[in-house]
Length: 151
Image 1 (tube, rainbow, N blue to C red):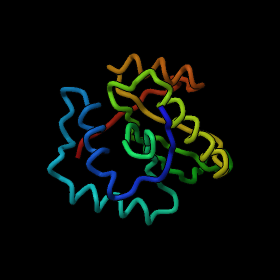
Image 2 (image 1 turned 90 degrees about the horizontal axis):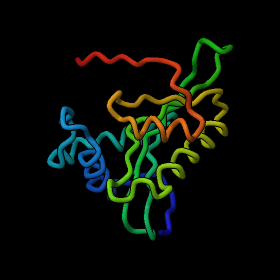
Image 3 (image 1 turned 60 degrees about the horizontal axis):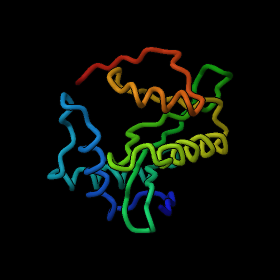
Image 4 (image 1 turned 90 degrees about the vertical axis):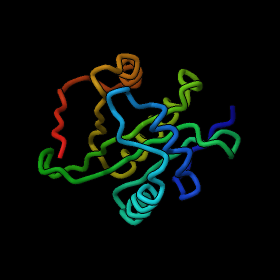
């Protein structure tokens, strides 16, 4: 495999939705391929936000095989330091355990470091034990418990 990382573009939407649908748990049915216009609008808004980006992993310059969203923000704590949040990290199911996820995660961490962030954080569903081990192998510590409230 020849994996490169780049910022997502509109032409990547279908592949990214496929990654999200393919990576969801059975109880999570929020992403559907038919909602393309909404994803295009979301990516456009993200592109205009200097504190946010969507990164894709591309195999041989053609196939989108992984993705993640990275958001940086200023905290009041840590003397007003900057923090980075990783969201929507997915690797195509048949290519998991091939190093793609590690490459994307390392890229996100280095991006956050270059942006002056003192911390990178993420959440992972309690049911994703393999993902938890993956994040721990990459230096993340399960130090907090996340909560969500659907609106």
